[in-house]
Length: 287
Image 1 (cartoon, helix red, strand yellow):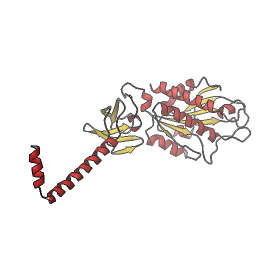
Image 2 (cartoon, helix red, strand yellow; image 1 turned 90 degrees about the vertical axis):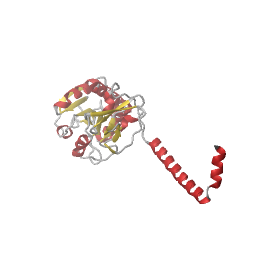
Image 3 (cartoon, rainbow, N blue to C red; image 1 turned 180 degrees about the vertical axis):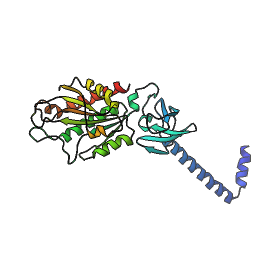
Image 4 (cartoon, rainbow, N blue to C red; image 1 turned 60 degrees about the vertical axis):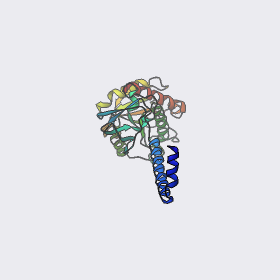
């Protein structure tokens, strides 16, 4: 058979050989490109993920995607990917695709959540000032919020920050972000003031709508081991709470004009303490 193939090859006109060689080369290139494209597709490292009708964790589940599946991304929205699996089209949480051993049926439910972290003030809005007028609230809300965001990301939460630097974001835009992302929770960080008298101290948690009462209680209790006093949970008629269509709380993590609280507010250790306690509290709440 080999001799016959060699004989036919020798008898084939050069033009045909060149034509076949070109066609073979083109097909080989196409094959390599397609293989490379397939291997470059995101692969599900999680044990299982849900494919949902809409890009949020409250939407109907249409399929369960198993470990090892490569995903062809049709489009994306709010950190969700629109893809097709087993004849069904839907949305998967992109931030969980690469998480080893994550099982949507049994693993931590907090990881499925989208949480908006809002550092209060920013830019031309300094917020409240320290008693000596040297230190601005906006500086420490951003530092604290970033640490909270980092702690939640360690737990694979989809974290969205309303600002990541010293810029001003309107109150409406902050609440709109919660709606746009269909956030499971909006958490705003602030520091309080006693109008310069410095007589008050401690942290307090605020909510406006009933859908945030339980989470406000959970966070207030979880922060109870901080080195500042617990002022409990209160009703807060603040724009980012009142006009928010998603569950929302506001955390006043100390008084800027308090000689007792300010050193803690400025302390990275205190901020990290707050971040870990908030993450633990939200883990308990969502699980």
